[in-house]
Amino acid sequence: MRFLTRAVIVSLLPLSGAPCWASPANFDGATPINRWWTPSNYPPEAIRANEQGLVDVEFEITATGKPANCAVVKSSGYPVLDESACKELLKRARFRPALDDQGSPRLAKASATAVYSIPR
Image 1 (spheres, helix red, strand yellow):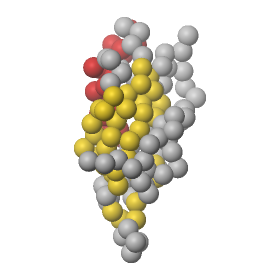
Image 2 (cartoon, helix red, strand yellow; image 1 turned 180 degrees about the vertical axis):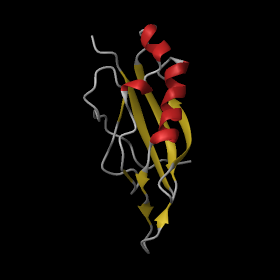
Image 3 (cartoon, helix red, strand yellow; image 1 turned 45 degrees about the vertical axis):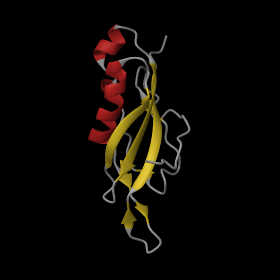
Image 4 (cartoon, one colour; image 1 turned 90 degrees about the vertical axis):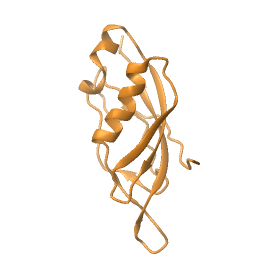
């Protein structure tokens, strides 16, 4: 599976302790339409254990704008953070679907990096 879009890391939420997602202007033609991270998305057990890191994921964006088939391609080194990245993406994220040459919604391939950071 070839993924066409690579995310640039930017913070979506100015909330302390909140994990954030990279959000480029284009996920292979699809665009995010919501912010799917809140401080409650950071697994409490990871915060207690001071676990932080980056999780690279690849996923599809369906013609209905829902993410699907999320897979971790680079681990943070912490299973709980890796699992949380895909779980929250699939549960909460929604996109404006990519369009084909005729203007019909189509499947898009994307990648992103979840950033888990505990402020000091």
